Length: 113
Length: 112
Image (tube, rainbow over all chains, first blue to last red; front, side):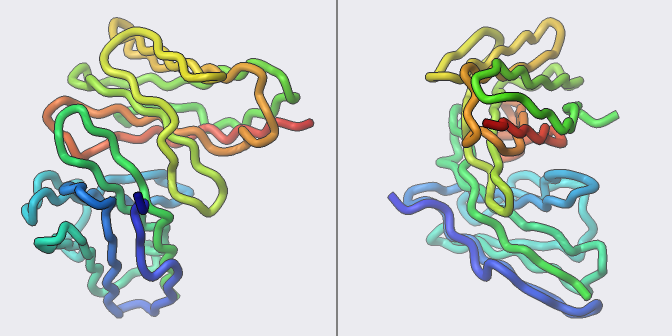
């Protein structure tokens, strides 16, 4: 079974631009979570989508948004990029039930100049 | 105070050593406890998954959870150079199903 895939793998943007990242979960998984990883803050939870609905949300500004499609693929968008948004963005998928664990993709490395 | 505290290391041990990695947490609602391994420039890889208190063994790896003291441990026996990575503890609650609370990660190097 194929793992979680993320596109693109690397991205360079400039301040003020916006960016959209994509995540395809493991086949059959209905929950997709997004995390931001930086050397200073570690892994921080952004949000989770389950069956096209946002189920959990972390403490990030409204510039960070996401959505999930009917095939469970998910996108996250960051508007008005800031230098501090440079990070590895990871998505993880799970079946969505109480006993389930999350499986991570390889991440998208975003550099904001 | 962060919900999960983990000593970032770095930790450097010789091949064959027993490695002990630890986390403490503050949220008594945490019920599920995961350990992830992350190699440089890769996504985290699930290593161990434990529910509630107790021990779980998988090959050279043993995970321990003590909910009374809010203490999580991972032991690696007969450590190998291929174990060199960052180890992340990640508990979660029973109600916040899609949200893991990560420690900062401990960077481990096993030298031959």
